[in-house]
Image 1 (cartoon, rainbow, N blue to C red):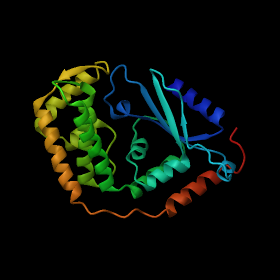
Image 2 (image 1 turned 135 degrees about the vertical axis):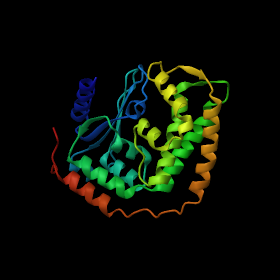
Image 3 (image 1 turned 30 degrees about the horizontal axis):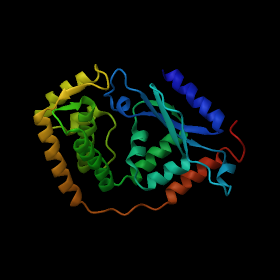
Image 4 (image 1 turned 90 degrees about the vertical axis):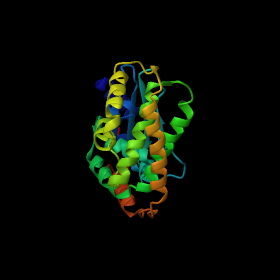
Length: 258
């Protein structure tokens, strides 16, 4: 499967006249909670030849391949990625921290260093809190719930707790968040869910688990209170991002990559 993904990335480079700087797995496979039939969520950052950034016409800054049952492949232009980093975009930080990596370049290390500098704890907590609360409100409405929705709620809550404790982007691996942030009294319940999840289809439903539901509701309240009390940190300036952008687009000169 990795070879198929790398072949798809090479075709993108050729058809779009771009150079891919980083490509990783995102979503449940990167979290370590994939079902046997989970698709592959491949995310990448690319750059165009320098001349493309020196024109008046605006160039689309996203590349998306058509979705199918196996692959979800899309990427962001370098300029978009760095602008989102300035806004402390949690999705970008998850790409950077993904444990499943299909392609890396020298720029990957630079991006990781920038991520550590531009991460804003309060906005990160609110991102994950809204994700958890939104999924809980939307999907936990009856006696039965899709099994995967527990992970779409519990993982962001544990990510919030990580940020509150450490002030850094949370680990992508769910197991590491469990080991560091989940109360021991709930560990056996979540371990059992994880075992079922990795052996069941994506559509698997289960009866709601009352102790976990109480933990979720209590966590949402606690994290909301903690986040509201946090001071807001000002965004860092653009200087480091501008320097990284200039250095990367100038590295290949003004010509085509092909």
